[in-house]
Image (cartoon, rainbow, N blue to C red):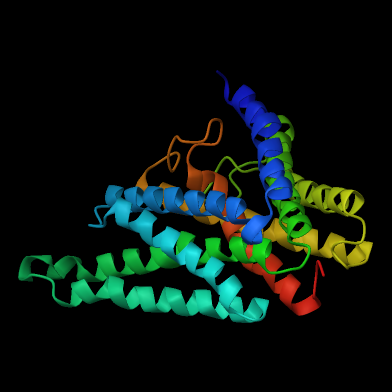
Length: 286
């Protein structure tokens, strides 16, 4: 089955399924959606651990996945404990810091033969707590913090997936000028333009489907969409740099047409804190 067919099947089958979960199962602050996000965070953590292994860093992919899931769930707990979105974020960030103490403690008592690896192990395991761990926690905050949480997460998804999809389509069909970024030589100028067009289209569509839900005028929605697109582009390129460093084409093979979970989650991870900052700063989706 070609990559194009797989992507189309994922779009026409997977996207409606996600929309149904978000819209029809809002109980317990969207526990079903949070479970899905946590599963992706765990899978992404495992794949990141395998990339580290390819570079010769001694880490446990399974533990990377488990820690990413625990950090993600700590943000979900923060949504219940905290009295505001900022307090919920603070609880998640504090939990990440406390977990880092647990993760780093064994390194302090490493055997003599393992000491030369201590720096690379500490860097890798600490990094995995933040990416995908803590960043995925902000996707959870988007779906648990604002009163109109369903509209918030679906609007965010439309912007990010619109950016990714149109960037891929325009890059495949119109992309002539490539090699602009060393981390991902196949990226083209047309693809970058498509990312902004896709996010803007997603934002406009979200405003049409959920009129007034965001709480911003059209110009504000357009600006938010463009900022999300910029973050999504950087997130995609950052993950490409990690894969190139490890000599891997994809982070995994769990998602048809896209590669691994981290390949599918990378843009969301980078854009989620920015979108959540908009929710906090401007009271979006209230």
